[in-house]
Length: 172
Image 1 (cartoon, rainbow, N blue to C red):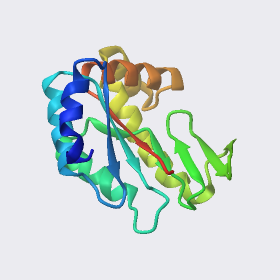
Image 2: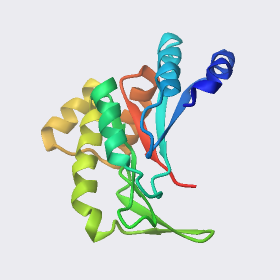
Image 3: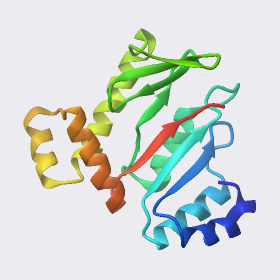
């Protein structure tokens, strides 16, 4: 996402099948990230965002996520979000959390403090994934839910067609 690497992005676009744009939870959308988006859009390549530094002081994942949605529309949807206690991430597709302690990561239940936010964003993820195909849209409107396999299929198709832009949370 840094503007300093714009030339490298242009060179790499000829050899890649998709792009991951890095944004900082502390700094938001940089000029380099905006430029990378334009390059990937012009090349019609699937694109994802990764919001890093979610565990750092003054890092605000949700502010950056909201800025991405405001700038690029409803096609932007979170796939993972940071746990509010800073110990890991919540996988919205599989509705589980991954807690990191030192060099070990364990699969755990979604923390109680994050359940409502995770459920709200998971519903938005299902709706966005359902928009990828007519079949998934019909299935979603019948039950207002999608199974994990359907969410994955919707993401796969949507990312390939650039109708879904997933957002991931990360921390060093």
